[in-house]
Length: 398
Image 1 (cartoon, one colour):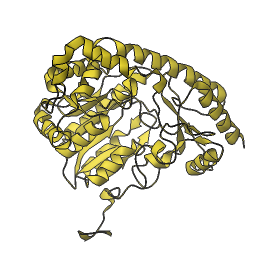
Image 2: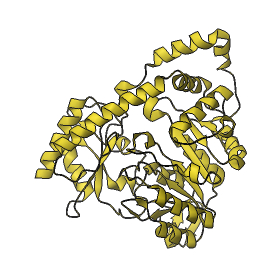
Image 3: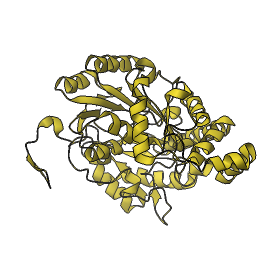
Image 4: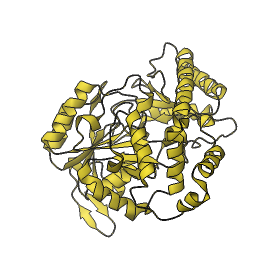
């Protein structure tokens, strides 16, 4: 049974087991760490900082906007615009989406205030209270929080080394009420799992059979070791793909491109209008300029090079330990034996001045299928990260 103030007492069933208030707030760095902020004597490897020292300088972007479009057009960026975004901004979005393997016409995408807003808009538009959302048993924490706020049931689905298990998804769908499935298929947060094309096609077949929407939030696809055809390419009629820019252009530049089935555009655009009226045109202009003039591509290359260097260093420092890494990954995953609960390891690491994100932050159900911690590599400078990794190695040796 569950009691909700103002609504009464309800009988809870297993399929709505995750329709409960989350126990923390957002991304792990904002919970027990510093959210990427420097604190003397402590290194935050829990919050995913995206090598922010390589972000493109904002003052140069602002000067470029003024020089390129002039004062009159710049004044137009202060005016109200259509919720889906200005045409040239959507064209830049289509160009950015192509990096992810998603080929979409500029008229068929919507500009959102970051990937989190795109996810919120999608769930608000296409799901109703009581609908169920399927997600891998460990996944991005925000999906749990949004499901609770929107009164959606969250169904944790079992995984293996290749991601979500098709038979487990089918079992969830067969029980009824699954409206959508949420996936980070090319680099799952937190485990870096990559779903191969054959598995993707199996999952698409199940979603078609049960008429389930696919929400493809592939924020770290550009860091994956090998590209794989996106769900948006395999099932464009039912996939909402989110192409984020924040990981490359800066966390404060809240611009992402939502690429949905054409039939859903109108409803999604109305929700953008209800939620933020429109994405600030100046932000969308800056993102469009960086994409169009090649700045975004140069910064992406620089960040992948730095990520490769730090991953190589992490493997060297933690050699002999079963660390899961990508060549260019922004974070890695450290599996832990059952005898060493992740929460205890994270607490011991914090006492030694290192913040890591333990698996409990990512649980979609009541218990984690995988025991481990996520270690972000983009915080501070390389020496900070290397020193923190050395302390983690010493802790593991104990």
